[in-house]
Length: 491
Image (tube, rainbow, N blue to C red; front, top):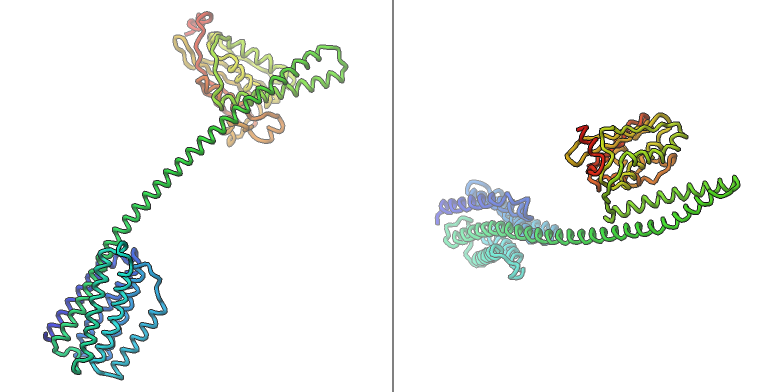
């Protein structure tokens, strides 16, 4: 093979290596080791033209430079493969091997300038590196080994065999005066070496594709495991939620039972206190009994609220339905609240239009409880001014009506940031009013639940220092026995 033909063969192989390197360059940030391998391939590409330039450039540029690039590229190939195989890089060993390779190249180029010895030294060094690359790829079990790893490992083993054969041949071959001696054996070894390098590059591309597939399978496996863990977490959360619901229901039932049991003896104490107050007592005794009656009344109110709230939470509260006189209910509430309001100098007013019927079908006790709570709060938080109760009809049907009952006071009002939580459990408008005026914070929460159970809604508007307006809307059926005549006449 002529020198020109060998030059063309080397050039074509260099271009092939360049394209193979570029095809895998985009994976350098995805797969470890490919940066080293890519740089090694480019060094091999740069080394080939240096050998070709031997006829026009001095040996220290062409031969020594090309051999040095070959040595560095071989070490980078080995380290890239080790990193690709997730092996620990041997940094100091690489530096030592690279230094020794450069020293060997300089030794054989300047101390022993024999071409045969140069070829022997470099072929032996590259053969050792190629053999280590092959071992690194093939030392895993056959189950873990992929086709790309097997092919590339085999190519490195073949490349190492060619380099060993080349070293042995030039050890015993007649002395050569030029690296590009027109020897068919030398040309064949050179072409075989370059073909081995090209085949190894193809193997790296195959391993890249297989690594993509392995990563996809691994990602799919991780996704399946994550889904399984998510399902287990959801099941565990559902189980814990059911346990919490059961525990909350058990707590509500316990509170309901305890409230009921406590209210019975308190009612007995209240009855006995009322009887004692009707007997002949000294002023001191009457004062003590009055204090006892107020304390028992307060305990009864708190116990009743706790019982109602626990029954609502346990879904044990039932809404009864019977005929009742709404105006009489409102008047009774006013009579109960009037003594306290008069002592404070606060007037109570009722606005109940004569056009509205008085008899409705619903739960009289729960309606009375809600109105009493709203009026009681208005009296509690109002020091001057008045309290107005207004009943309106917002919608009318043939046998039913939507009522709006509002209670407006001129009290202290509610801050805007606390209006959103006014109907929550244990949430007085603010702590200072709770300390000043008392209360458990359950009344409005119970009223809201009761109104919603009866199919209505409750709202509030307030301005600090000017007062508040609480109102609820409630759909009620009109009692057909009495009262509908006035309702129909007004419609």
